[in-house]
View 1 (tube, rainbow, N blue to C red):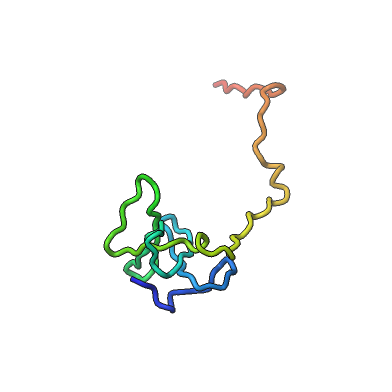
View 2: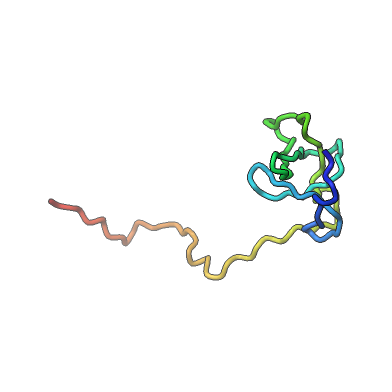
Length: 115
């Protein structure tokens, strides 16, 4: 099933092409090219409520392409103009709460309970 132009939206990475945004099995958004491609490694389908879903066809435990799915390419793999968002900067003050190796010297023993 090929998506209609009402299903498409501008690329979230800024290349100005129209893409189909799908929801993966883990609930994340994945932008894919709307035109089926035999070289693709992603399967897309539309579920009952009309949401476009996607899953990977790569990997040893991946199911083969099913009859109701189309094979497409992820958009970032085909568009060199796409620049995914850089990783978020570290939060200020977070370094104070990172795990440090604990030393056992200098600690008081736990108090013992007596009845």
